Length: 315
Image (cartoon, rainbow, N blue to C red):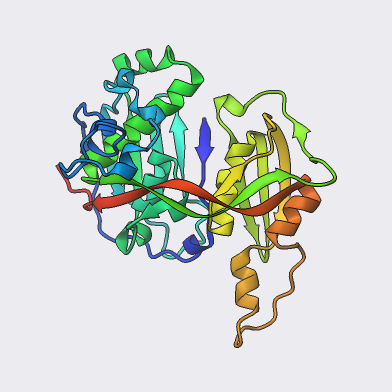
């Protein structure tokens, strides 16, 4: 089983949804690539033609026509409660052999479905960030049989496709893509060379990276991970895109200890009590511990813009 966690400071204090009830349903076979995001020649979720910027969007992996039939057969959704406020460390998504499970707010599910850093999701606010849902989904035996015949790359795309279809059906999610140029960081090799340990193989066909908070120090650990996955994780930590330009193919094992920007910013506040930090800021930690470096740059990104969502309803 593979875990994917989105860990960020904004999840440090979350109000749990209190409404009781379990909602379950079979979801219809639909194609998220046609109804939720658009590449060239597609029509947006609200029926309008895509803009010129949207027409320049590269084809997404889950747009492959062969994935149209891949949807979860049975889905259960209920409010996720854990005794009130949580620090967010037990929130996440997990792929099961024949399905998917999660305890996450809707914004995090959108992140997982479109594999997009939080700063590239536009329109996620209010209950989309504060109300957490427990989601369990399962493939039919026929879908599972077809899924098992896919390559690792296509299995990943199929899982994203199925989660998108789930969100479209149960949360009435409609999104579109907008391209824009924004400040970014290039992840490059430092002057003294990389300090990475070569992994025997890619972790089950996907990169595994986790962040574990402890007081003022966070530990970022990668096992069988690609540097492009590290770059995406770093994007959430520095609040701008990080582009892997190291040229290193990996996979690698690595660990990184750093003080998050949110803690450093709080320590700089006028009324804040001084906090003792034992790890360097993330930029310095990357260079000292991984032999890599963040260099300011610019990039064109495809933002996922949320047009419409609804709370899930009982059937």
